[in-house]
Image (cartoon, rainbow, N blue to C red):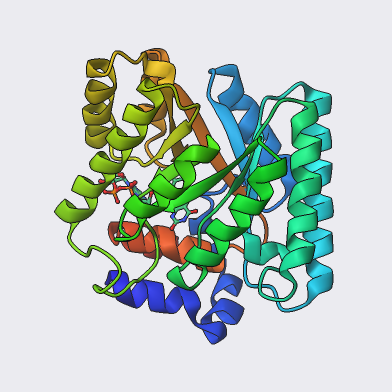
Length: 306
Ligand code: FDA
């Protein structure tokens, strides 16, 4: 089921037609407050009142016209302006392919540098999402260049990839922001762990390794990008054993998933962030959410009922 849904995520015909179905539009609302920036900011303001700081991402990926990258960058700049005006501590998270990475990587770097400059004026970081394995090396190399002159940047890494332990070692000297996720794409066994237990074990090992570096004095901003509360609690115990406080790392979850746990963790003293996606290009992203939990397909189909 997971593989079928991930195949559907990449299918161009479905990408064009499925989002037109009214019940799909209704179902996606579970994971997205709305398609426009006003809806996203309104949802973020609610979280911020509960000490859960939002991270916003405008949906879209693998664009084919470089002019669209400029439009997307402009929208992120406007979003940063609006957050600054509202006194929000929110941040942004960007997919490189939505800023033209496939077409002109230097232009993408210019865009990211300007976004990081603007975010720095209000003390925020800019995050880079990580996409399928075809982009892993180029995204990490891109991050190294960006981070060299823009300290307020972070990157997402995937615990299902066998290479990630080496990537963490490679990045640690940069004092990076690292959001660790399990990984949302279909990847082959040669490069990615396949079983849940292997992925979870690697997730814990990577997190504990990074926390060990923090305890030794590295200034890494670690975000546990997972809804797996059991893993979060396990990692929190390791952090405590290393003499680290709960705020030595943060928990990052997606809007609409385990909102009750997000609030509970925030009340218990964890630093919690909620990633809010918005935009019209939600199809591939939404299909990945269904693939993470095929029970969500039933929810989506139920939206077709009166
Ligand atoms: P797991 O899948 O084991 O789920 C744990 C529990 O969480 C489930 O039992 C269920 O209760 C709940 N849950 C998880 N997913 C759900 C869903 N879709 N619907 C309902 N309940 C769900 N991936 C990537 O490849 N590149 C990226 O840049 C990012 N960025 C990113 C940012 C943030 C903040 C998060 C939280 C996640 C990502 N991801 C990502 C997605 C990530 O790789 C992964 O696919 C999902 O987080 C699901 O895995 P979990 O770690 O939540 O664990």
